[in-house]
Length: 351
Image 1 (cartoon, rainbow, N blue to C red):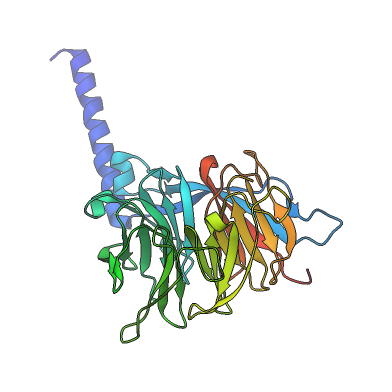
Image 2: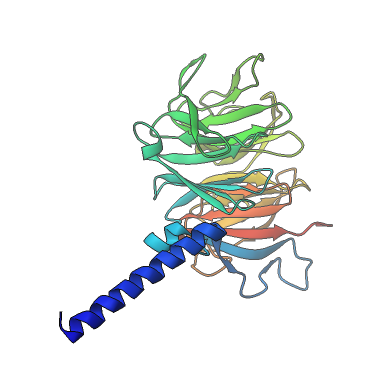
């Protein structure tokens, strides 16, 4: 062995020893790697309505995806991981702050548990057949329900993101195109919109009767391709009756209460209504995909104001879809074609 070969041999041994030492240190101290949300805070004070009027909504941040931070054995060997949103269409949060995002572009559900710094990607390999997630909801035990529109089923996962079972039929027959989901913790009932059946199905707690409501039509309590649903804190159900260009409101038993909306291009009109939600003060929020905005209405369905317009900046949207309001009155909007979720604070007080 000549001098140069000897030097290279020594350097290679030193690199190997250094790697072994680092690995041993990590194993001794434990893995410190955690997952975090990939967020961008609001760069300016975006308010709706603008000052000097009293604001109702304030932009907080933008979620782009999820990424790994810190060091672990895995990151030492394979590098740090990240999972970006591709086409988010629905979002929901659990009572412990966890968040689930249905991403049709990635054909997966992003499940993030901030208290544990844990990220779980739920995708087709976890299941059998196709997987086209379009709706998500958590129950009071943090089970996750995912509507799989092309698979014609609702898949259920435990709090660790492990598959438990699927719902693919009702006493009335098989599911056809399950889409929007909502969970009533008081009644322990899962509500699921079936767009092609023009119905809402209610899957109750064990021992209680299954119910459904809706038929195709344009009368009160009838639907024409419904898509989204939201259960308000007062127990009312809001359903997006998409091709009737209106929002219908029901009580928890499915009894029709009221409706509002019409097709048009003016303030308070709809072109392609999708996500629906309501805050703690009763204000109703409706995403309109083709208008690239969120419209706000009072409890009687009277138009209040609009959030957003077409664009790529903060507070702007490009073909948005799903929407969710958590118990702390944070508003989440799936800004689908901008590949992100925008988060807003709902300012409480006199409207």
